Length: 296
Image (cartoon, rainbow, N blue to C red):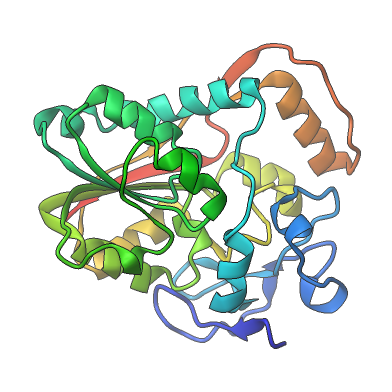
């Protein structure tokens, strides 16, 4: 247990007493030594920490990795998209996120922008094309991505705690970040303190109440080692209300995939078989993510 800890609910801080409602095929505590190759790879056998439903409604892990182990695992990873086809679909998806923020990006030319979990820099590139005068800072724990990110901004950090205390932002963006952070409320407090008055926090997360999650059960790809908890619109709203943030919107998002890629992962999730398909065509679907925008 040296790499693991028992955690309370990150929203209401209560002890998790209920039995797990989403269980893996293989419990990493009993049957698996955590290694990098299992941290990033989607497994046909479902390997994740069991999920419990807290009394406040959050779906969360009772046992998760300690911070030291998390930093080690996140510090050296591939980017989230690899082939040219994947990159184009990632850009199409992130263009959809950008369109939700264009009013903010156009409103202020010298906008101060912070992105958490910038990964390969695709979203930051789109932001800079929309507003070339934006003043940007990024936080990315994966040091393998820093060289590329430094071609877009000279201010790249591996930890939000290293961002200078006097820096305040008009817009903070965190795409698929919130469901990776164990102490979510503490993290959200840090982000709120980094906002200017009237500044915005925008995020995208998986929706554990989505139709896809209900159909696939424990085969849903978002149930994985990297996610200590998963949100739905109600639980994300509870977290922001606790910090007295104001809601602008919560919306379902469209993700773009190559149909062959989608079919491959669907078959792997349901039938535990890996079959490679040729690239067919790109399709945009509301598969189970939502975005949100709150302001200070």
